[in-house]
Amino acid sequence: MIKKKKGRGGARKNAGRKRVPISLHDIIVIGSMCERVQTEDAKRAARAEYEKRPRTAQIRRVQKEVRKHRITDPRMIDALWEGATLSSRPDHSGQPPQEARGVRGINKMGARVVRLKIRRVTTREEVCNRVSDGLLRSGRLRMTPRRVREVWHQYRAFLAISQAESVPSE
Image 1 (cartoon, one colour):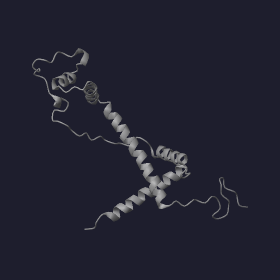
Image 2: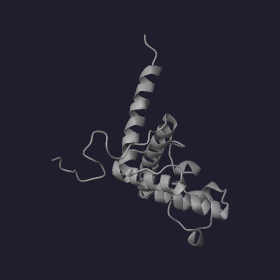
Image 3: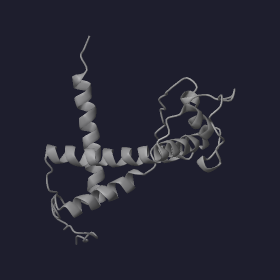
Image 4: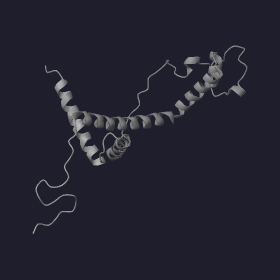
């Protein structure tokens, strides 16, 4: 006697639910959605971490005051940078103090580009759950998170193959 397995299949060969074949276009769309969700979360977390730094908070405070009151006088900007508020600022009609740093006081060497370290903050499981929910809400495809994860693996394999083929051989 053949014992029936738990699940949705029969004892016969090829019995059970059949997988719906997914087109290459759908693999690319779903895989890129997974990649986008993961990178957006990582970038958002890196940006939030950067904004928490004391120096960044001070820069944002000065920028806010300058924009709010349309300040163009470098001496007033220096005073804001030193920690003064507009309600308690000294009279700037005389000579600027020796420690005045000008508009470049925020960055002594002028403008600079900050490269943030981006680390994954969401697990693949969370990303697959969110993509599965998004697909269900959009009505495009109905996929379980497990199937989304498999498609994501196929997408990454497809990217690896296409990148390897696009590299010119010497």
